[in-house]
Image (cartoon, rainbow, N blue to C red; front, side, top):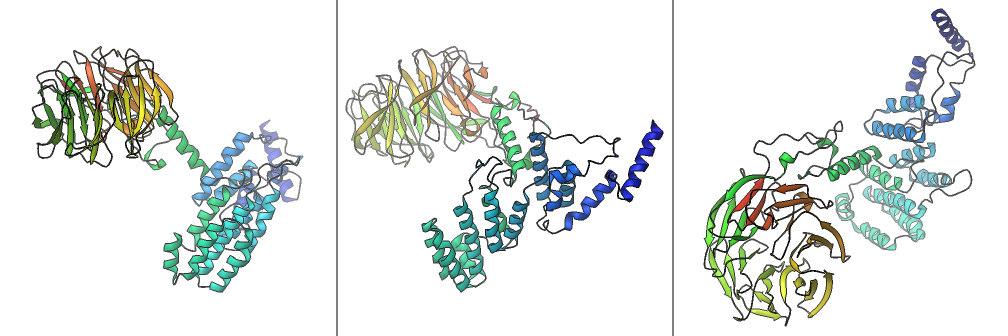
Length: 601
């Protein structure tokens, strides 16, 4: 059998030399393909049209005397797509001969010859030919049965071509030619007249640099023409021309999906593929997560009711039944906290704290029977304002306006005020029994939970209000995400609910936490606020991934109810919890952090 195969091989070689029907040996076949790279039609680095036809390649292997050669496998659509994606990527790296060989051997076509011609004409600045190519491409939008696969946006594509042509004429100082394009070609399209008016203004530019600055255009050359092609390709179906950098797009989506599905992913990473390995799946260890007690703060001598990191993440404020507020400094390297200042004199204790947007001021409120609030200058330790409108008031909650010059406060006895930094009353709302407050980023809307188990939006500008959230049980507290879209509610006997404030729908109910009628404050946290944390009456701290109803962690260590949890807004691996056991626990990664076994290592 071995002798017969050798003879067959020799015979095949002889046939090819004498014009026989059998194909040449594969090695020679590849060599001839490489020689074709420099042929016309491949000047933009893409394989020539003669090497892009699958039928041509298939017919080349149909010799009658090649019984010893294996029949070429018919590729599935998915396999063809992968080969085209690889080809496009190799082309972007300048490996054009390799692309030509890949297409020849696979029998695939990277893109339609008309698309290759169109690409070459755009890159060479042959605008009239590129316009004619559009008509050919338009004809390719029909399948064999006459059904339109995808109608090209011809006016838009032609507009983009003519715009580039116009700008290049202007850069070259050919003002008359540019004016002819504007009047005779762009304007008759009757497309995007606002843009045409803007383009006409560029005629007044005195030199190319002025034109580039005003048009926000990088100028004539390969760069701007490549970007033009990227825009044009979005209007063509992938069967004709692949979308730009399609393989990189798919790989980036895969990396992002793996990160999204990682329950413990809590770091900001470069979105470029250069920062990851594509050879391993992304896995984050829980050892990198703030689930280990890093420090226990014991300076308070009674129940700790509240804790809150400053907006810049450099400080932590804690309020206690012991009538004090303690300001802690976060060490930048070790993330250890040290006491820097104690603010005293809150006779009823401190149950709520709010940092001003610039972290200069801190407002402290007391429990239900407290009619006063304290506005402290944190930097100097001086009390700027001690406000009390009436001894009948109950100022238990506060929220800063984004401008940092006003705040709103109120309580369950029916008072609801807007004040300035000196405690002067600017506006008031009669008879609103407030449990918790939040000012939205628009600077006008104040959200307030009330005794009717709802959250309403109030405007002090026109004194209007509207219902946003309605629960079936009392809302003990709530907080809002940075983007103002989501609200996290601690609901009596129900646990924690996530609401979409824009659509006014309940998104998710988180399980595990024990929430009765104590006021417990939960929070968003972690990188991109992907996580939710809350204290609980069972002495634990619970952490959920925002999209998962079951907790991913239950942190133990406190010995009484955990009243409040605060996640550092700038250090995703740092979290604090305050408890009736008189301590504040600082949570961080494992002491000896293991490197992440993932694509990001």
